[in-house]
Every structure is written in structure tokens, then in C-alpha cells.
Length: 459
Image 1 (spheres, rainbow, N blue to C red):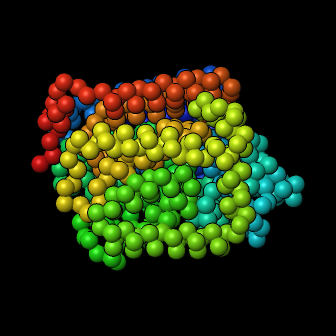
Image 2: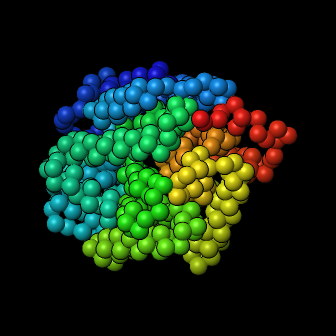
Image 3: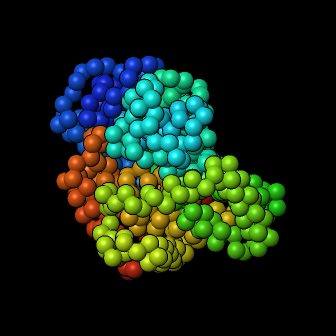
């Protein structure tokens, strides 16, 4: 895992390439100008991801066979250090954060990012607009009002410099990533093995560190709100924490609308406490309504147009469904719900990781996994929606399966700047294959179903 981190950081520090996009002045980042070829950074990235995945799987294997794990202080120290290092290196693997910076600049200038496109800012000759990435130049933002507020703050702090806006965004994402790591540390209890497993899935996971901070994707903000909702409730069946948890869950959806399904799992987990559920639903509804009232109806219209951008579909959705939104939405919802229930049924064969907790994390994790693996549009950074939640349930075959899936998708899309058609075709094969394997894994019952859990038994 350490070798994977070193190789990823080396590729980022080498300067603009197929891995690192141009962002104007170097600004505050630790960056060289080696001019590495696309072939070089492709194999560098793939080697790094291979090392990271192999290390993660090896340590998961050791935990299943009785290793007690790392001291908690070591986990948090190394996690914070890795997050800080990824923050000061240039953005890599994607141009999405450059889009965030442009939308933040648009908002800070007093325009509406849900109606004004980066191309409009480009035509005005704005120094940030001149660096807008081509793929989304003609699209307004598709992110929720909570994400837009963060982008606007970074745009205000960074001013007319793309590099400084990006640095502020990375700082916010690093803070969110570290906060999630600390919350998982609290939620997994005193057992070192449980905390180490959570670190493998999130805190010390080189793939997640790369996508959440190094590449700077907004998923880091959304999952922080969702895990925060679980932490706030904890083992206290009180209305105040439930109201705050609902507000945090609403904020997660206000970052990315796709987090609505994990939040549905959160609501299902609260069915045992109707008063808490009603209070939390109220908090979530008020948060979402307030955010979208401020953003205006253009925010909802922009989200619905995202479905029309179908050149990056990862699952083979029939054209007849894509052309009929009235059929498309219920079909996707029904399929995703069915898979979520299947995963939940499999996870329910194990006791909760923290029996005294008010919320059982199993339905939350199940709906989060189903939401990602059956999403028509999915990238490896989408895995941030479920990996921290998997840390809150007992180990299962899902751990290794989803780690391998995320690593393969990452290796396919890297170096990431200008993904070619063959890369999409390979990703579609991997996504479909692993979806089928996931279903089969949930349906298959081993002859010794308790053997793995008996070897990994938190005290």
C-alpha cells in the first residue's frame, strides 16, 4: 500500500501529463515539469493501483486470520499525513475539480452556475474561464446546492486563480476525508481489528485518497455528511440527535443527488424508532427544501439533464428505456432496490458490528452498494458512497470483491485526462462482470458460512 502511494504521488509531482491536467500557474502545488508521456503515466498509475489493491487484500486476509490490527494512533497519524500530502500535490486523474473551480468562480462573480456554462465564462475572457475543461464546457453544474456553496466559497477565497481555487477545494475535501476517517474510528469501537479494517476501506486506502483528495471529487463531502448522520445518532434514541442526523443526511443529498438511495437505507434503519425517523425526515426535508429554494428551479432542471449525457454509460441500458424517461426511472429504481434488498438479506445473516447502536448500518451499506454498482453512469470514485459504510458492518465477501472492482476500474480509466472509447468499453465489461459476480456471491451460501466471521471476532 505504501508503494502504491509513493508511485501515485510521484506521478502527480511530475507535472502536467496525461495524469495531471493543465491549471495555469503552478501556484501553491509541489510540482515539477518532467513532461512524462501518456504511456509512462498510464503504466505508472496502473502499477500503483496494483500495489495498493494487493496490499489492501493482503491485510484484509491477515485480519480474517487473527491479526489484531494497527494501533489507533498510527492509523490516524498516517491517514492525516497522507491526506495532507495529497492536498499539496497537483490535481490528477480527472478534470472534475477544474469544473468545480469554474462553477465556483461563476457563483462568486454573481452569476447562476445552474444556467451559466463554463463556455460563457470563457467568452468573457475570465482567467479562470479560459482554463475550463472542454468536455463539460457547455454544461451548467449538475451538483446540489450544498456542493455549489462549497465551490462558491473556494471561488471567493481563490479569486481569479484556477490553481488557488483548486487548492482551497482540495483543502475542503481533505478536511472532509479526515473527518470521515475520525468518525469511522469512533463508530467502529475499541477493537483494533475493526478500526484497521475501516482504515483499509477508507483512511489508509491509496485509491480513495487519490480520488477524494488527489483528484478532488465532491463525493468526499457527501459521504462525510452521511457518516456524520450515523455518528450523531449513535446509541442515543433522542429527538435532538435525530433532527441533526436528518439534516446531515439531507445535506449529503444536497451535494450529490445519487446519495438519496443510501439515505433511503438510513431511513429503513430507523424504522424501529418511528419518532426518531419522523424527526429525522423533517430535518432532511427542511435542509433540502431550503437549499433548493435558494438555488432555484434551475438547479433541479440541470440535474434532470444529466441523464441525457449518455456517452459514458457503464451499464448496457436498452435504448428503449433511455428514450422513455417515464419507464427509465422506475426500471432503474426497481432494479437497484431489488439488488439492495438482496445485499441486505446477505448482510442480515450476520449480527450488527455495534449491537447497541440505534441505527443498524446494514441497510445503509446495502443501498449504497446497489446505488453505485447499478448506476448507469459510474466511475471508481463513486465507491466513496459505500466503502465507509461497509466499515460499519461485519466483514463479508463484499470487502474483497468491491476492492478488486474499484482497483480494476481505476486502472482502466487512468491516466484519466481524456478517457478514450476503448477505456469505456473495457470499463463496461468489468462493471457488468462484477455486477453478475456480486449477485452470485450474495445468492451463494458456503458450506461453512460462519468460518470467516469466527476468525474475525471483535472483542
